[in-house]
Length: 261
Image 1 (spheres, one colour):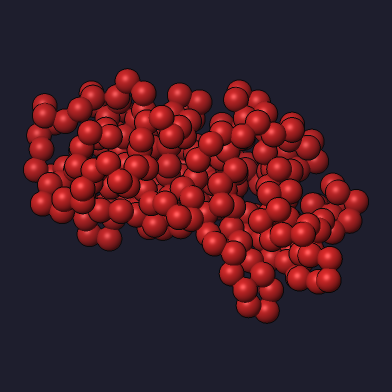
Image 2 (image 1 turned 180 degrees about the vertical axis):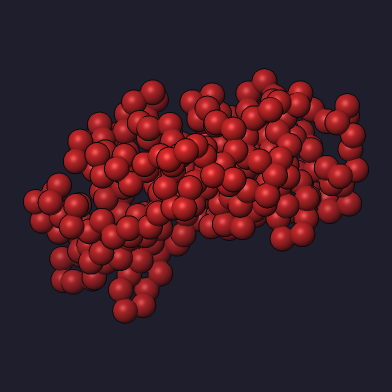
């Protein structure tokens, strides 16, 4: 997953997302963990957090077997609170998020989490390592640790087709479905602080319409980790034309209802 430098975020769409983000009156809800500083833990392939080939799967080792003193890094009062429900973000459709028996890429892999899994339950434990924060989670009954860069909170889902059409002056089209999707994703990306990362998180599928899902991770507002774009298109003689676009806000610090806080 390479970082991409993309043109600046259009002001119209930026205002749309900031309005949707909002903030809760009277403080954060019970689902809100301590603030997440996304710039210090940006997704990076150099951490090998998502490597599936260098370490064998070993289901006999879990974080529950290790005491705090034997875990890598140091305990920090930071990250999702116990019981918070999180989604996997920024993991390519042909990759997985490794669930490890302890924090850090040297810990054994105890399971592998699909790119669109959205029911991780935080245990309330965060460890700070030199290059990343790691959190303890429950994945479908298996306890382990994941890199904090690859999880977020689900926010509101809205239909933003009209806003994209207004921004581009018409319905975008491309000779390929992925080309169309990347053109749409570019509208939501930013080049601030190193730029956004655009990741295809599902393969292209075909039904009544063609569809594909992309994550855009790293936006200008720290309450929003990114957006998940569910893109639908029709195929014609000249390629694929956008039919409609659903946008899910990926919140970084927590949610109150469906609003990022």
